[in-house]
Image 1 (cartoon, rainbow, N blue to C red):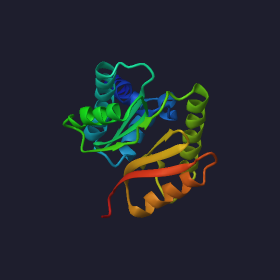
Image 2: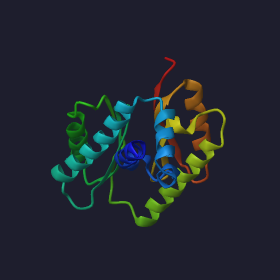
Image 3: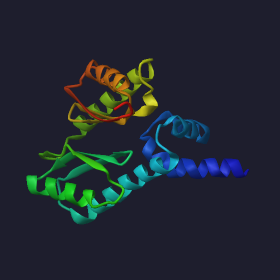
Image 4: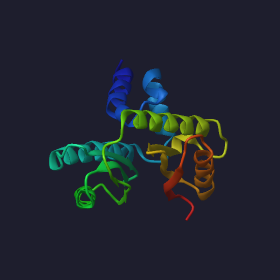
Length: 192
């Protein structure tokens, strides 16, 4: 009973970071397996989830402008900012605001100065992300659990703790996926 409650608590805590993965559907055991397969410690994994939640909260409070759409993705303290903002000044303000968070080690500011993305474009990006993840599952050269995939305006961003060989394999998979216009790696390499 205690073990299932602990699994449920972990799933509820970590669930938002799984970003629609099958582990949420399968249950606590699969969620635990994903965390166990991750190269980050459990504490770092939880910190990354907290960074994403805190950053989203900060952005919505500090920048309530209409037409702004910012996504925050954190992996091992490295933060990727994607989406659309109305001006270069706001783009820089968002980065400065997030950089003040003690858990943030590095920021990749990929925000676009543009109008908010259409629902059709968002759906296309979600389909590209799913296709890249599916192809990563089916490759032997990289463990798909070690790579986080984010797509914005047909550009695929890859994050994770990987060797140079794993990173290149993930880049190759993403670059040859239908609909991908560009691949931007934001990897932290384990074999410097």
